Length: 109
Image 1 (cartoon, helix red, strand yellow):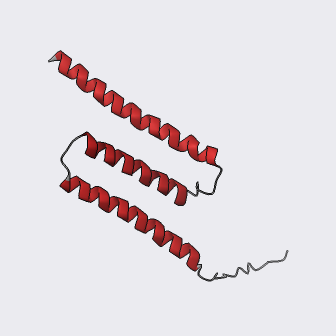
Image 2 (cartoon, rainbow, N blue to C red):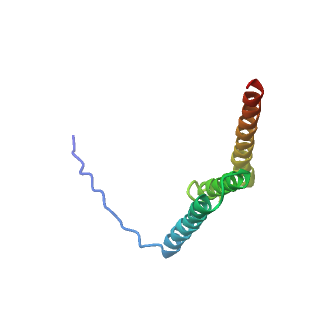
Image 3 (cartoon, rainbow, N blue to C red):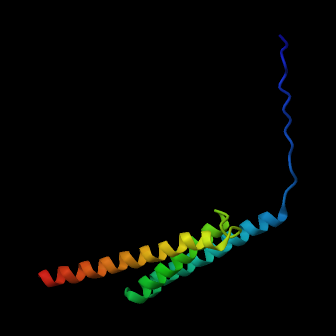
């Protein structure tokens, strides 16, 4: 019976500046969208325009995060649309249910 030594070596790969630039670009875009949302929250009056802008910007950020960090931007488009389209319908469903619920509430009182 022979004892074998496990000789594992650690190899360090050089820095990839292109990937680092892409990460900073993604972070900058997400930061810019968040700053726009933050400014809109404190400067615009409450109403359907503000809420719809928040929903659109949130979906845009979610799409960008999915494409960059979940690597769906490099995948085939049907896979991307199989995730985004149901999300849009889900947001529409929530808005419709809230509107219908408020109408029913107002009819009862």
